[in-house]
Length: 196
Image: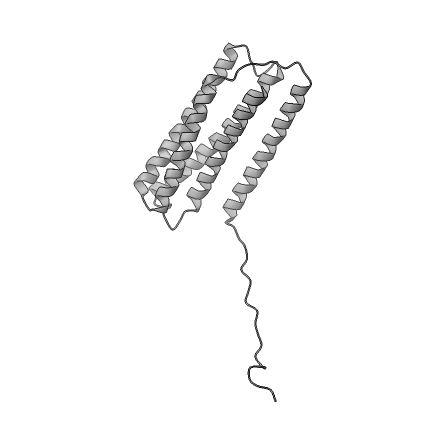
């Protein structure tokens, strides 16, 4: 004799799938590709240095100051993110603006750092040790410009009230990319200091 409980068909509950916002996924793919590119460049640097004929020189003092500026910009970017989480739109706008200005200041300081290199006869064309410094800082600068573009879009979205506590994807993407660019610069800068 069967009971009603034995005749019940059990339906498996669907398992929760791991998912990620497609834009965040693309960002992480982009970050990984940038990391691979710079890993290849730093490896090439070490291999070429081991071959000899390597000019030794000190990095421009402005690179130290520009590194500090970039670190401060990371703090202002984090403040922007926290402000968005708390729906503090005015602080969000101000913090994004400060981050943008500091990013521009960093780029200008890098250009003046290049002038310091030229003043001590370190050129893009010539000894490969100087070429690598220009390539590292120049490629990072190009990526930082793309970060400034991302900041501009976030700034406009903040004014249109499209970034707030319930819509954080854009500011999260912006903050992740900006912090990554800061970490990347610090890696390159200290790599050059210890391997020059």
